[in-house]
Amino acid sequence: MSKGIISKDEDYSQWFNDLVIKADLAEYSPVRGCMIIKPYGYSIWEKMQAALDKMFKDTGHSNAYFPLLIPKSFFSKEASHVEGFAKECAVVTHYRLKNDGEGQIIVDEEAKLEEELIIRPTSETIIWNTYRGWIQSYRDLPILVNQWANVMRWEMRTRLFLRTSEFLWQEGHTAHATAEEAIAETEQMLEVYADFVENWMSVPVVKGRKTANERFAGALDTYCIEALMQDGKALQAGTSHFLGQNFAKAFDVKFTSKEGKLDYVWATSWGVSTRLMGALIMTHSDDAGLVLPPKLAPIQVVAVPIYKHDEELENIRTYIKGLSAELRAKGISIKFDDRDTQRPGFKFAEYELKGVPLRIAIGSRDMQNGTVELARRDTKTKETVNQEGLADHIEQLLEQIQKNIYDKAFNFRAENTVEVNDYEEFKRLLDEKPGFISAHWDGTPETEQRIKEETKATIRCIPLNNKQEDGKCILTGKPSTQRVLFARAY
Image 1 (cartoon, rainbow, N blue to C red):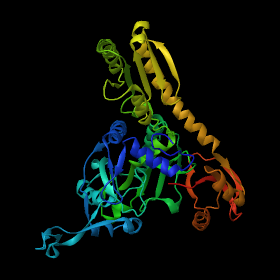
Image 2: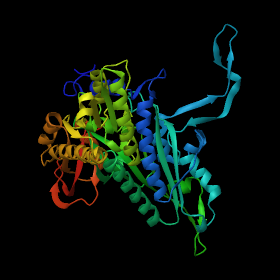
Image 3: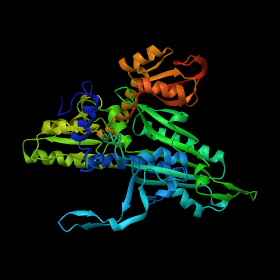
Image 4: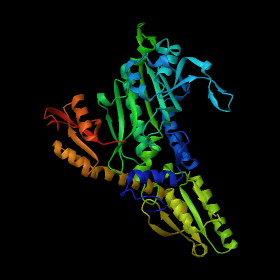
């Protein structure tokens, strides 16, 4: 136990929950299945947003906003889409409350909506209804739009960040003149997501395609990035969908081509959500608290003064003020914690819990010697270094920390990814040594479903650029030309 956090080896699920709450990331709300994201947690999400938003704009996309409420009739226009989301929809039926005369507020039965409204579980329907008015000819294409929003999918079993009824996300919705353009867009956005998750979050991912059973409702093809958590379970970190002409046909979105022919528009959609916060926590953190990659840490460096007299504190403060200016010029955030209400040891534990990558401890003796003590959160190592050139040293250390936690996660994934050719061994490993299992599958949805029912393992993806090899399906023994990636998942 540490700071009220159970060990992840003892109870991984409880460890995650304790950590989210104790590190001030989020808490449960009065509404069942929803969460309150606290300032520290939201500041991490803001950094994620800022990085992703720049990547989207660098690839030619613009932000827009569409309504939270969607007419129910829109969902009946694309059959597989409504089937995929029907069980998760929250429905608005009335528009007014009234007093019942006995001090209770009740729904006014006379204020029933003519058509029920769905709180958006995703926005394809309302966006493609809108695009019909925006698109007449090839000159109006492509449309490259992203939306930052909240969505609601009614969940019976919820977990903070990983699966909540309401969550924050971005959803890209693009329209194209050809299938080739739309597929290229789908693949490009998968690469954007992989770039962000690996280079900002320091989480290694496998890029792949979903099977027909696991595709997004209404898509012809779904691409995904899959990450492995420290308990050996997989987490889908992002998806990008080639929607074909399904939504264009459902909402009658046509355009006149360069050749003067009338055709339906080709579509994509893609998104990541606050589930990435869950991935960040579960990939790197330990029993002492969060371990944050420097690029996403709200506080990258914290300086804690150790002093006996106000004069000593003033000398330290003057030094840190100069160091702060140097660090900020490099784009590095630093906090000077000179609170006199808490002892240094309490502060050390607090910033360890919150995952601050680098801690400076500096006392009067350090000021005399021209040194500081630096403590790394990722390795928990300390070193005494000279004040001279400290800003450059800190900059290099933060780069090392970013790389080190990626390498640690990469090595963990490598150690927990195995090739299996036998179904009994497959089932045994899922129980004894969870992780990614690379195995042959006969390509049928029936076999996929049976494996899922018998083992709770799903095909996470068919890896891109997969090695082609002759083999036999682990369950049926039928011929197979490539391995797919199985795991139990969040």
